[in-house]
Length: 179
Ligand SMILES: Cc1cc2nc3c(=O)[nH]c(=O)nc-3n(C[C@H](O)[C@H](O)[C@H](O)COP(=O)(O)O)c2cc1C
Image (spheres, rainbow, N blue to C red):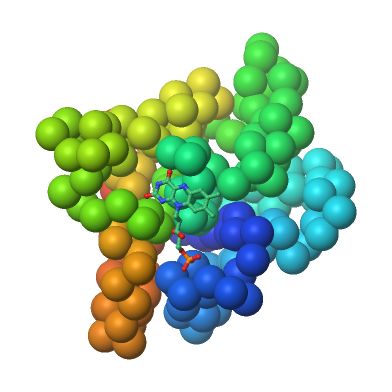
């Protein structure tokens, strides 16, 4: 199983959580880490190169801080630019079929806030549905997501634990429905 983690953080240097996760990912030879904002500072995505990367991996994790209940804009641009008709979908668009797609995200909101009764009203599972739907559309299996809530509570202990939990998640997570 070859895993690709596509990281979309507009300012990874200033980040606590995503930066710590990336550091931990780099310790694993079987995981390819691809930082979108560092690769494309002008946001000019090389579509052929991105498609080659996807084709070379079985499991793709999109890692990002939650921004307005969604992804940072370069990841949305990546979806729009890379997942093309004739490649990802359509009669001859079979290159993403059978891949596994997952999400790892960090949220300022607490776990309790991401409940029907909480201040954010919706669960993260619900908020991430567009990516689950995207996976379905391109014939990939969607993986249960990984998340870290309450990002303002930064302690060394939490950073270490979440980074180790994240690697464990990536290595063991299984799709609920296999495509
Ligand atoms: C533009 C912007 C929008 C944000 N929107 C949300 C949001 O919708 N929900 C939430 O819980 N946190 C939101 N946050 C907080 C970030 O998710 C949080 O700062 C980030 O996950 C921290 O991770 P980091 O240390 O890797 O930067 C937002 C932050 C910014 C800058």
